[in-house]
Length: 246
Length: 253
View (cartoon, rainbow over the protein chains, first blue to last red):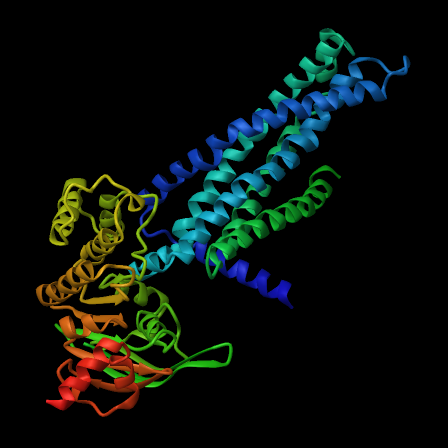
């Protein structure tokens, strides 16, 4: 029953979030701020994890295909497809669930327990929409760019790791990443990460918005936001893969 | 004028407010007093619509506020200013931006007009040269005054203050009380202040309502409060040893 209660409450919150904004100009300004806070500020972490993801995939593939019957370009091909299909969308989304999910839940949660949300409501502002909608728009718009960036940096990381360890040549790697390329994989990854971004933002905002008590509860909300966002990312990963690739 | 008729409120089957009827007068500072946990904050938040009451009616002049639909309630709220216990200023905005916020949201003023109005409100509450500071960079008393400035920015008809003196030293508390009183007269507002500070009662209490265990136990003026025979109210008023000694001396004379 608890699960259905939360699902119902979550959709009621979404209903309020997508109500007509009071003033579009203010929402636009807030969205720009959120793009900076949630998107631009995540570039660093996404770049770092992507370079290491690419490197590890390349090295692991090289050690698993040491048999001479496997051509060396398979290393590049495997790195590319693994990054495009899974790592640059799902793993990046899981990292973002930790970074922006906890940020959103703690920010909104603190506003709740310090009565800032009540102050907005008293003024006649739709607090749910004002606080959450710009975050949703910002993350859904910006995370596909992070995903594309992750793909490029990951492939670059794979090349550095492969060439520096001597498991393959640059020619093999470049041939591999071009071989049997299916552009739809990029579209698939971008659709996935946009949906994951929506889930991260709304689930985290839900936990923050309904925080009650003090700093301890805000901390708990933040933890719940990350855990629940991660679970739903993995669940939707299966659903979306079945829907988009089968 | 604000009138509360037969309101009750429960949380998880615990009745916090029991059949309360009160009339709060326009242009006066109306005080709700009571011990911690007596239900006065729930009463205040029920009046402003932050809690939905189980039964009863809340009149804002002729309008039954708690029976309005979401949109009308939202419009009505533009006439309400509220000072929260902790100030509830937006952490991420400067002092000036906090006061400008309601003007930004609900008026078509130009940037310069909004800034002028914000400065006017800040000046009225004696906040000078702090426009660019963030709430974390100013004192508790200043935060309360900025919150008052934000509350009056849209010229509200109704002002609500939830324990405006909590966490303040006696001198600053008196300043805040005086400010609330002056603004009530200046803007001809219906002001309701939630407090357990007896100094506030003596300073600004045009009308005083005593809440005890979720029920309205007594109501009257600040002059009548010391004449009352109500035991619970007397226990509340004369809780400190100093006030008990004064009372003994008064009774002797």
